[in-house]
Image (cartoon, rainbow, N blue to C red; front, side, top):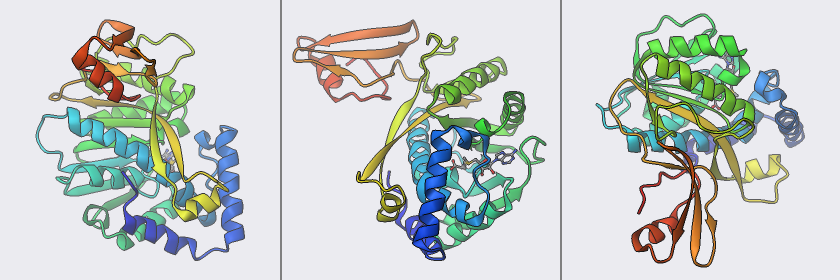
Length: 324
Ligand SMILES: C[S@@+](CC[C@H](N)C(=O)[O-])C[C@H]1O[C@@H](n2cnc3c(N)ncnc32)[C@H](O)[C@@H]1O
């Protein structure tokens, strides 16, 4: 799903307040911090210029990942309409923008964030962005580590924020997030070994607390992946001209790798199986690396298996697998 054009325009308008040179430097610093793994500690956003570089360079990618996850939740969720949203560690409001794009029934949003500058930027983007949910959102400044005194919300999301905390802190935040979840809790992190490892452990806590895993797992059992492997998915995003310039990128697109878990109180149906990597396509057969309720499986589908063959040729990494 592309970034809403009104949000894109609002980011470009904000970018006009800085020289191209300063913005390029801030974006390069941001990219270097991501490569060095420092970004996951949150130390990289130190000025308004960096906040805007985040909105121009990272927000499109985390938005693409959040949209992909929200789409999956929408497909799996069969409970009552999700009317209220809580975004924990909202930054400039990225995940709320994604949720608004996917769940038209959302009619109120609360965005919880520690950084005053990101809240100010998020509010300006929301006002310029012509998105009803965002324009009317309530922004709450606070520290996730001190459980926010808020009413439960139907849909609670934390996107690319838990990894900035120590693991014990992230566990406490998720305990509080679950208490504030009316229907569905979505945790989204970078698709790295670290991001996945954290989610894998948090998933166990949530199952222990009575949560039902909606996605990506096709089961409630312990994750069957061996040590060193990690469950993650790609989200492709088109780069705007501004994004391309700030990334010195020749490519008009990038693939954001993300890891996530969506857990419901009740209602909704997990996928029968999940495709964990790119299917391997050969002339007469396709191999599908699957996670299934019976564990990991490498399924070979041959041309003679008519229905399954057609499905397997279309299937992509991250899709559910119904068996054709
Ligand atoms: C990488 S940004 C992600 C922003 C946004 N959720 C997204 O997906 O693009 C992480 C955000 O979490 C916020 N954050 C980190 N630790 C926090 C805490 N203890 N309390 C509240 N917000 C926090 C940061 O200020 C930052 O806005």
